[in-house]
Length: 126
Figure (cartoon, rainbow, N blue to C red):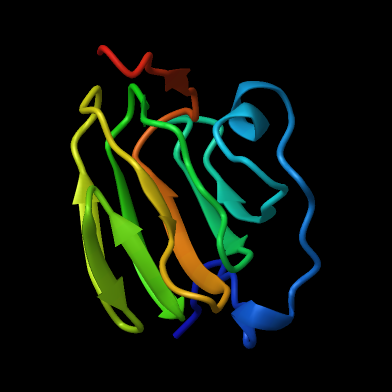
């Protein structure tokens, strides 16, 4: 039997990270780390590993595409609720959201966008 192509990342916390730019960077009050794992040119879907430093704060925002987060290590505050290692959160497209590190430790998570990445920062009144 012949198998298809496969992407494997064995240690998600040890990857090299880059800082986001543009509107993606403006969402946070300090630099975060991103590592692109996969992108699909046909659908625009993108998969990332994200590293939030302890104490990072996020502005309320939306994305056109729905997306999913799976916490690999640490704790994450999602829309006012704290979730930990192994937790799953799904955000429908165009819904206001806020996700940031919870507590005094960094957080690593997988971020899976169902379509192309975009971001709109919301005013506090939105």
